[in-house]
Image 1 (tube, helix red, strand yellow):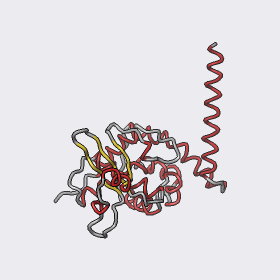
Image 2 (cartoon, one colour):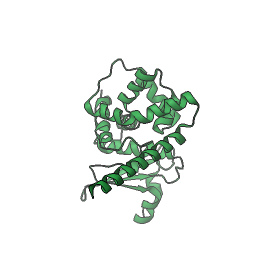
Image 3 (tube, rainbow, N blue to C red):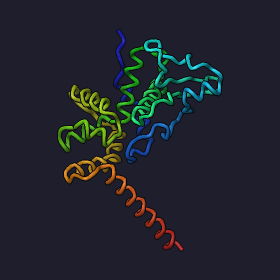
Image 4 (spheres, one colour):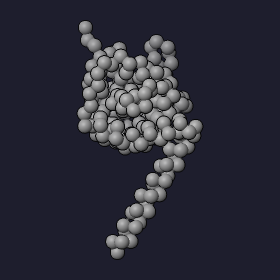
Length: 229
């Protein structure tokens, strides 16, 4: 009996994440750098442009529009990731897109239950890297749902499922990519736990910290330019 290949999901998601600027507050899937030709478009706009009926994208089980799906155009070698424009929650939409990206990077073609499980696991690793969570737990103790939602910008349901999965692990290993990702994410993790101690708002403090860093970097570049001339 075939089973989900969780190791492959972790490896592929980590490889993609490693190429991104993971020091940002949260990942925005539509802004990621891909080494494949990927276009994002709403189901509604796609149907309007191609004159296809929305009924082509109804779920067989619920007779509702899919949250998302992916079309591959072989003659041009690119993917169209379609999403339901009715989704107003950023976390929900972001996860849906990450799930579809998982299908692409894992080479899925069957769209069966195993593919679905693997795509979800890929999204989990992309948003909540395993080694980063391990280091958070190692440094700060028990990882809470609230910590994950605040730090990584995912839903409470996604955070809770990730914690449950991590609790079942008996060992962890880390590649150099994992360590580099943690190094880039460590700063915002530290700010979150500092805010937790002081009662300050994490999102406000992190935005302020990012602005301060940007100002410092701009000043450093300006001084370097002046000194060069």
